[in-house]
Image 1 (spheres, rainbow, N blue to C red):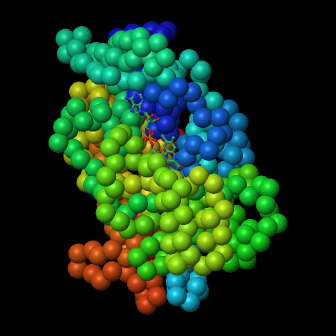
Image 2: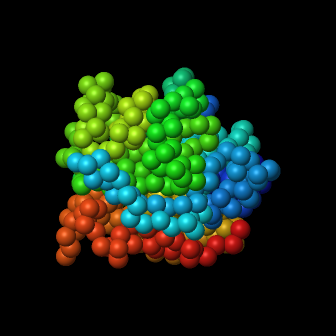
Image 3: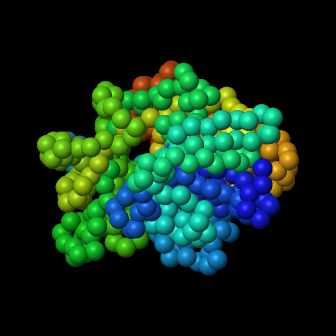
Length: 420
Ligand SMILES: Cc1cc2nc3c(=O)[nH]c(=O)nc-3n(C[C@H](O)[C@H](O)[C@H](O)COP(=O)(O)OP(=O)(O)OC[C@H]3O[C@@H](n4cnc5c(N)ncnc54)[C@H](O)[C@@H]3O)c2cc1C
């Protein structure tokens, strides 16, 4: 199949971090790329999403796609410390269990990172407002044909190419075609999330209080563990505080195609009351003053045995739904994209299947271990049972048990070999 300028043609479904990252790497590998995204337009710095952490390798990879690499630093905040605190909910006391000062991540707001990535792409790559419907493989011609519908007009379009990349997230419909029995695994907990914009209340009691209680905000990834619950919080650029609070509960009965739940003001009030019982007052104030908190149901899946079939390949959450405890989801997506691009560049368009084979060979062992580690770490931090061990108790944990909480224990933490 010949794309624009005689190039091989790739279709990507999904215009979030994994899809846009793959559009960058495939373009750099010499492919003509069309990306289909169902949302009608890119978010314009609106409160879409919340915070995420970028590891050093992802930072380097992203910078290699930007004409001015410095922009990444201007769009993100340092996260140089990984700290785990314990909270005694009765006494309303918090103390440090572990502190790693050699953490080298950066914090980004999802919408800022997303904007940075798509603005660095050629504008005609992305078809916003198009829902992917189906695909067919034409074995004889060695091509893939996809159908998508334009939301506004209802017009159905067909695109023919040499490769289909599924970047359609943890509920991927493309993956479902190959794995009809696939089901996500509910983790046992949901996460309340929010971003407090403190630009107009910088000198308020809330902000001076939280800075006093957590003096390294602005460079620290704070985890706070209470009995049967934990929070994560860190500062983002432009005077924002990102927080997540994991709450153990049965799987909510929600029908639909999202893992984010609509919340009522009644649910928010109940959450505020519960926060008062669990967390220190400084953190409670931040939670209470945050507008529009939302609730994510936390899912993952056992690692997949395969992440490509024919000329169809999975990247990002479609390839490895994961719990968020090791800050992996975005970083894995960026590395998937980078490795896929390098493999396609190496093997050329005539040997797409060899390229996909090598991509799977490189990525599958890494993502599989990271998904399982994140699952285990989440259960430890949430005080949930694990085989052959007592639930973690932050009030009585021994120092060697606390060491398990560190981010740097993530498999392949410093050990992913990839040359840009
Ligand atoms: C709006 C939004 C906000 C987010 N905010 C955060 C955050 O604050 N912090 C964080 O850590 N992670 C966030 N995430 C998740 C994070 O982006 C992902 O977990 C990770 O980066 C891997 O992403 P992904 O691209 O594989 O999947 P996802 O981010 O889930 O993206 C999948 C994309 O595919 C599109 N899509 C799905 N089906 C179709 C279809 N049939 N046709 C066309 N398009 C389709 C979706 O609209 C979506 O854009 C957010 C994701 C989204 C979509």
